Length: 365
Image (cartoon, rainbow, N blue to C red):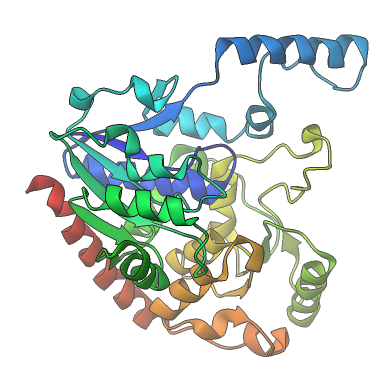
């Protein structure tokens, strides 16, 4: 079967890239031909960028290198893009209207926060508005996320997306709270399933060429923060002092958009994966930081990230009976020595994987 994946644009977010890679890999192992739909920037916009970059580098001396017609996102992701180019099969179109009904046998929407209006616009296209008149394709949602348990859609968006969702053959969501949101706002039944990254094994990631060749990180405490704060660094210092650990990072923690993009260039995806391989303990404010800690059986503490959505953390940790890994009011010194029952966690993971694979079998029916 020829399948298209529709997800958030892939740039330099490790979790976003790997959830797409994992979903594609799983579908290919099921025997399908899979492509990711991506929208290209226009030639006019690229020419304008080229001129701006030339002026900033050669005349104003504001940029250390001449980046040609590359966007800021492409420059920041220059070391993550090789992973995307090598492992993710993309179909580039100018816009969704370029797609035709018989281009695919099925479209899979998901995963990640593709159903969050702040991250994907127009949001109706995340419900395949561009394909609303197509009758010869299967429509599947795999582990789509609203990112939050607070409803963020306008009344008009809710009505339009609810109608579009009725056309889907199967719907699954990534958070337990999203099951109820679908029921309340869309009058649609949804199944709660794993993030795609958890459908692959630890060994699947370790066998990637770039991971096998990635040098070993020097340190024991892997800190992966999406939003750096002084408080988080203080927490990492408490842990490192208590356990005599050396702290290391496997990403560029500078994400402040007020800082020039040349100081925000991200590290390779494989370097980040190797961080979990080498860590003794993980401290993170990232949903996928928690996911990969679970996958690699690394003890971790999750720092809640309200701006990016707390529902994701609570749903994931509750599923694996790891609610106590979320740092709330308890002292971090207490959590660091609390053991994790990895046998129980791995049993849950295997059970949930089988549930996900059974769901995806709808593509064969």
